[in-house]
Length: 311
Image (cartoon, rainbow, N blue to C red; front, side, top):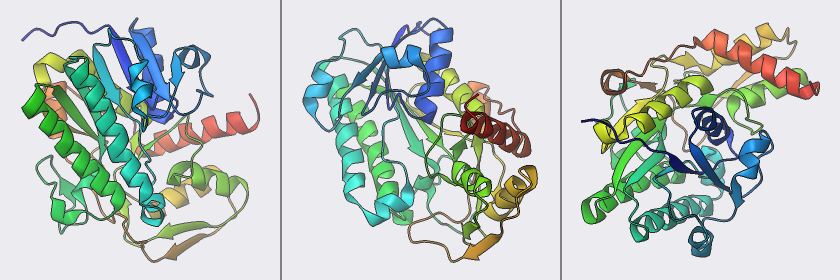
């Protein structure tokens, strides 16, 4: 099947890490980009000028959007797992903003939707490597996980009932530029700059980290091949596992840190061991992550240092 060219896209969560970098690439490829976020984009003026400030929990936010959108890329979410353990209301918000966005698609007869899900849907299981068929409700570890498992179910329901074609991308620990959150990579870099100890929650914790450029390349391939690969779920990750202890030690080494790595017990709701099987994305999308973990961490440190020095 030949893919019909998509030209105008809506990115929810356009001021975030993935949203900003994706928006940049889409603009470079001459797409018309409309952003939607709670806050302005602090990283890129071109995207900021195209960003509508609004709260997706309120339906009227979506009523003010352009009517000629051809594809919605839904990235918006409360995405810090432990934050949603502490405050599960944030998980309810994730359901609500997804529902409202899907309703916008239904009422606008908009037939293309990409949903950013998460490796969290696999939960903690006896296996290490997970393919797209290994997601089970019984492995739901946290309210955040539930918002992604339930979110995927809702996307499938809108496909079945309202002919909304979709692609679900399950992202895994995306790191790199445009992230000033308390996610583990920027947090460890910041703490090392401040000579503070790095706390690893779980001595055996091993996860699949995806450099931002590789995550964006996977999403772009979904956009460019949408009609050919629609109604599929893809792991967009590196396909390699890295321990959090190794991450902490690598950051200390690259930054000549004098701080210590402290091991504590795994926190409630967190996945302890996960590596993505990316063979389906490779076969159907020609997805090919390029960035080795050590190289990605080095690039990330350089970017954070440049921002802290104002260059």
